[in-house]
Image (cartoon, rainbow over all chains, first blue to last red; front, side, top):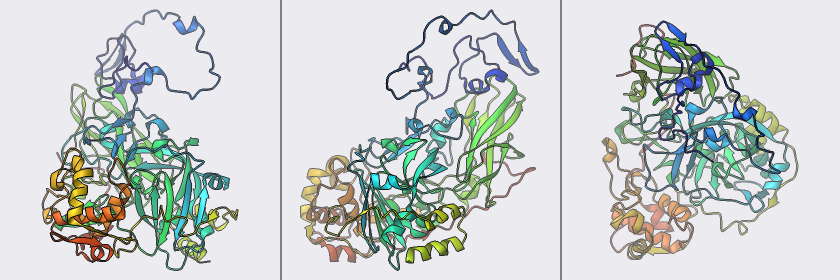
Length: 437
Length: 197
């Protein structure tokens, strides 16, 4: 694909010279534009003044045959979208890229569903390529009859499909007390949302028969880290899925092909990918992945363990860090809100750094533990502004500030579960920047 | 059936949004799928250790001295001399007491509440370029070496299932259960305190 033409360095779309940036025609591109507008349209403090348009020529695409249909192919995005990429973490940089992560370009996601090729990744030993014909799931331990299920066994069950977000516990870890990241992809890109298809784990636990005293499950992957987590049985029975489908197709290798756990609302790493084994026990395993990792530092040298739920959170994606506004006028602020504890009840937006807040519009559908889009129309006066969103979920929980979280947690260093309100500053020049402090 | 008892109990507790899944579970299609497996069938993949009591630690033994040799051959390139940090990863030694500061140093010695965590992790994931290639004796030896560097196994010492499970780790009581929601933000709309500058 020809991706060289577009600006790729900052993950921010750049308008070509002469391309219209009239907000009413192309607000998204306008908000995303990082280039000076060289077209015939300018925005002023009093509103929009359109110069006389030039004559519109017949485009070349009207004057030639297009591409024919390939006999068989997997469709790809337009070559003009080649700058829209999932990017390896580049603020916190690992020295190797096997136990590593990549981040979703949320500022370029125009609906609640994250395309599979842009869905963030977190692996602990790289991506295995597993042949589904050889893949099995074993369920054993405190069960009446240990069983091995082939992929064809699992796919013979009636399927269940659910829309849910998935977020890494580490989302936002670089930006607690000072702006280290530039874009929302870097600050919030360990997040995606998809329709997940599979079967309830409870069906298989019913099939093997849980023994008396069964309280915890081990989920273990078939990757080079044999990544594993202990899962309480209440959650496994309540709503945990074993999924093979994501957004209408089989999982991508990097997201667990051919089988992964999916635990709605919980940190992504417990939804173990390449799932090959479930063991039933009366207690948790306390593995490295749930003691030395994926725990949260607390005052007095303590660590919070098994902190699985991803609490209510939101962020403005347009405009966001690295973008450029082009003069005063109307802008639609857009963003996402989500909660691992239920549905989004409301999102408020501040334009003055948190002194006053106004309720934004939620866009349907508003689904349980799913990304929800919000919109807020803003008439920017051209002065300095500090914008942020604040979500409220169906439990009544109000998204906190970093200062709120700091009252109970230790938040210096490599710290996860950052669900705080996240501000962006707008300079009179129109420059949008990370304003966490 | 016990599993259905649990399902009923959870349903009675009205776990949020679980109702539809549970209804499906109650009516789980009885397809009689799955092939019975024995412990012997799955022995090669049954690698987890119940780290709090050491159940699952295999027979075998390894010495600190052997661990040092294996470490020099298979680990030092990424983790550095004497596990002090190398080309890929940071130190695996020390850090006890650092959690009271802003420079928390996470190592097996400072962080693990139970010593068998180290056996479980090395066996399942190390060395990164050839996971699950070490013998149980090699895993015991490497565990003994790294815990020796952390002052938890004596010089000239060794580890086996019994001695490893008996080690008292400094961070044994370092964990608290998830007590969130811990923030109590209010939905202020006017005259609110600004987001910290």
